[in-house]
Length: 632
Image 1 (spheres, rainbow, N blue to C red):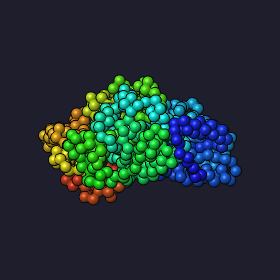
Image 2 (cartoon, rainbow, N blue to C red):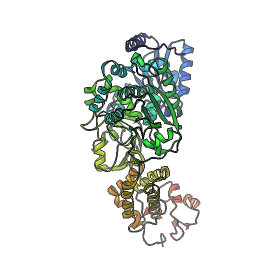
Image 3 (cartoon, one colour):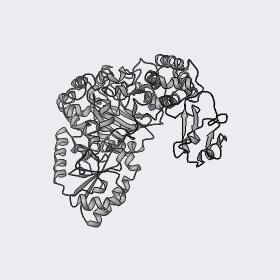
Image 4 (cartoon, rainbow, N blue to C red):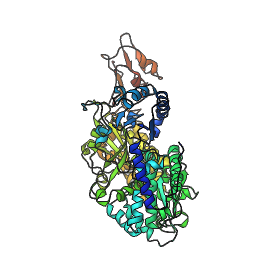
């Protein structure tokens, strides 16, 4: 159904519209299902489910409202369908399941048991979303409309308190008061640095220039991260509202959303949201009759990780190569801002938090989080864990609660938790001894990690920490812009040392060289990429040094991840004489005797081909030593 729009002339009309929409929503006698249409669920077939629901409703001639929501968070169980008003949660729904959900759950109010969420700890399998352990300890502020509204329908957002924070700002507060409230809220930038948002706003306001800009950083480049993407896809109006409030507070007229080109759904939904906000008079000239003139446009980035750094991002918007520059001048000053305008830059999640401070009130926001880290944080929870997905938790929650209560524990219950990497490729690896550590900006820093933008990767005993450090460093060295030698040369040298160690060529002193190089890069790099790139290496050396020493001294990888390390042997008592190891070996190292196989160490290249194909785990990897032919 095509939406029609009438410009809202003032706050009173906005609130009248909200009441009208709420009443219509309550009186709507159509059945309702919410289908997750985030990128992950679309990839597993949610668009096909929508067509099937439409076909079922037409066939049975029953009115059905299908809400195409953003990410519901529980990506591990997608495609996700939630049937209202009971909020019954259906997981991994396929096209053949739609008829059953429609006839049993939608029409009769009974659970369609085949695709219900189930867990041993739940006595009643017919649970609502809020009863599921994955959601129970979450606290949704930035994501509170994700999974509830259609991101391409501004009326859904308005009905669910969208732009009410802006309304309160325009009617109840002067610009300086808005900045003061944001400062008192303790809101810190969610892009990684954790700088107080209110102080940044205040500095931009004090520039004295008449023309200013607001920039939203949607250049989320961390491997496996999808926090900002999900917000832009699922609730773009929360981001726009935060930007408009910022513009009012600092006196800005121009807004830019910098989004990487690899996020096509986010770009599409943001574009629709901007057009609809303009049509309702929430963007453009004289917003809600307040005299505020502010408009936004989208700038697509080419996907360089370094463009997440503020000065590189601004250079990219201006059409220059995305490379950081020294500060001062800061973006908040005319000489350093976008096209000579004093510029306030925050990331997507930071802006999405702003409306809640004014809608719910300062006291409400201050009641969540820790003393120095207020509010919540959105994480992309991934790795060797049962429940992966998008989560939002209050600051101060422990790693144990996230990993074992929300995440459901280790994917393989027989494997021990080993470490969790927080903060993306620039973060640190935190070992099991710190599982009860509180998750906030300052506490994570005490153990050598960072909050970062919100990546969280869980690892078990089968992960090699040297290989993990090498993986993350390979990313940051490739993404270095090359402007400053400590980052350009130093990360490459660190990677070469790690490659040497994981290939069996490590020498005494290499670990010390890695530490020395890492500290020099942190101290000498121009921007945040270089300042934090050595973190995965330095933290793994600090907490898992024995693994590095095994790689160097014993030529052994306890996780069996690194090629070129260890002595490969065949255990006769486990071997079933299938011959797969001999077939897989390209170097004729596997020798066949009348009653057994053995590996000739003079020919073995430690390529792991035999180890990978053995069906009975008869091939073992032992610590290095003298090459002895097995069985002789």
